[in-house]
Image 1 (tube, helix red, strand yellow):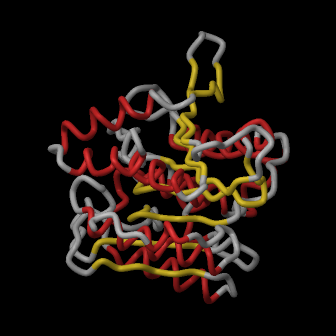
Image 2 (cartoon, one colour; image 1 turned 60 degrees about the vertical axis):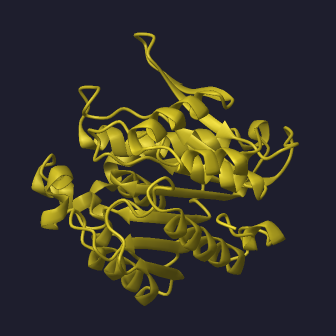
Length: 298
């Protein structure tokens, strides 16, 4: 079935049915084992390739980290996004990663796993037909924190720890946040920040790590989000610009915490896609094509 036809089918389903459908669609995509543990446990990365995509191509891509505050199972959240981007010639990658809800892992294990997923994509760019200079990282709530952790430099106090590891590849081309966790000191982020010792929380807090030389940032939020206040996203985008980096903040005034879910409100989904796409074209990371202007809703 054509990707856009699948999107419209998803929009007609109830939320719980859509999530089940997302997961089914996810597992219908090519899957790659990106990490294997000694006990045999494997983490998969599901890849949404554009039509006619081939190994050796040089396509832009987006690595999506799902939300769920490291407890919920939200692996399918970005399936509609990946489906749509594939139609625009952009590869979407949705990796599994360990969460506290399913594994006995600490917050730093999860954050570092995000970096390792990013390194795997970068190192396998030729196999996947990706341009290694045009890989974007994106995420929602805790997944947004993971995307920021990939893009931001380590706090100086932790430099000695990371010197023991293999060097990471160059940073991502851009970062996209869909009501991402930006400030671990905020009360709204207590579920995540409260899992960490204070010194560790401060060391990885995105607002404390913004500096010059960062990739472009697209941050978005719903104006009526009661779980994660939108002003933290706005503050991050402002700080990004203050440090001479490029950013755009997209506020959907009357939207709530679910604003980026296609099956909840396709109009918000389309607004976000249009704004994000125009920003990425402006940055020279995505190439403009007429399909970006085609409305999903007719």
